[in-house]
Image 1 (cartoon, rainbow, N blue to C red):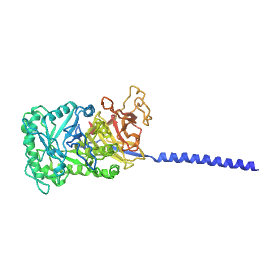
Image 2 (tube, one colour; image 1 turned 60 degrees about the horizontal axis):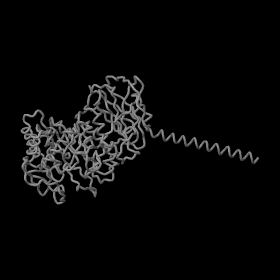
Image 3 (tube, rainbow, N blue to C red; image 1 turned 30 degrees about the vertical axis):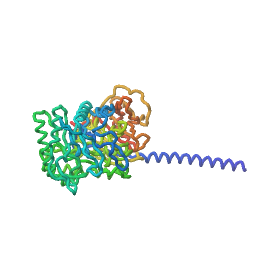
Image 4 (cartoon, one colour; image 1 turned 45 degrees about the horizontal axis):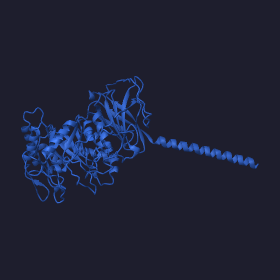
Length: 549
């Protein structure tokens, strides 16, 4: 009897263990299921809602010397225009990969730069730190030998240069921080004449930096600034008289102030080709909540306001002036290490590119190409940070015509679509701000002309397996295909400065060559698998829209 009891108890225990095991599998399966959500993006191809430049992507180079420090961190190194290593092969290749890359030369200290004149006998000194002076530094000087070096480098690397001129020459600064007097253009004229006489090509001349509205450090009244901009336009027309192509004139390179910008656009009408504003809507680099802001859809939505307001001013004025973002580092005072130069910043940066495009912002300049804690390149090693590759993919895939998109299913997915740059199809950008849930995204279209079947001709080479290996790289013959570029952080660490493309690390080789950016191929009918905390570019060459013809 005791034996039967023991056997019965053993059987009961075995049943419980088996049941518990099934429960664990079921729970695990349930968690797996709940971590995947469905979403849908609707793309309207009837007409474009915005239009951008072919070379929409732009990056800045600044004047800050290595003594520039913020919150106890000195992040500029030798990234100043006066001492940047122009012989660095990675720097050269990083710019060359865009062919072309717009590069805006400027920043706070541009309004303290004097340009050496031919025959000058006096010293041409660098900036020296002096906290008792405006902007915290003495005046600096650009030698013509350095200007020669910069122009030769930019020509060879394929950059289109926008140069920010000193707009404070000739003015006096009052006790209240405002300026009075008109701009003395004589030093700028000497620089522009030297540039033309030496055959250097400048895409645009921009007047001043952050002197609009209340200004940073000091400010200039809108009517006076407009008058000075007209003087610059007249100077450019005079010096470039007879030239087939003349540089554009830009201004004010400052923070948006509705009243100031409205007066400026009205008064400078006809002399201003591009109006430039700066974007630092995340607050100071020392803010401990930067990542929370970047991952907050509502906070990102608020970033549309200055784009919308500026477009309203331009439309009402009926001017031909177009809008640029002339400088955008997100977090001011040099950004924040391992945030604005890490993978997580791509969510803010690429969302800004997509959002700005929908409001006809034709160029977007990232602060910086190199320097500070928000560079596309590492200040010390020159190795690309994650956002460099996001910018390069945008440049290669996103065309000039912006399409209307609407996403449903979750507010954690940001979606933008353009006519493709490489085909007559479209390119879709999807940004997943959710760190837990994968979103399977279906696509629907409004006013598609047709979907063209494509065929594949050869099998791909054997590749190292990654978590993306299950995605077919070569669909069957006669399937409609799409190309996907999945960007994720190494080890899922948002603060990582190493980015993976389709599961593979992007690494510059020993020769400084920028790695190839190759897509995976998927059947068009399958949903797009957008992993947690990932950014995906999707090129669909087979779709035809009226807006893209």
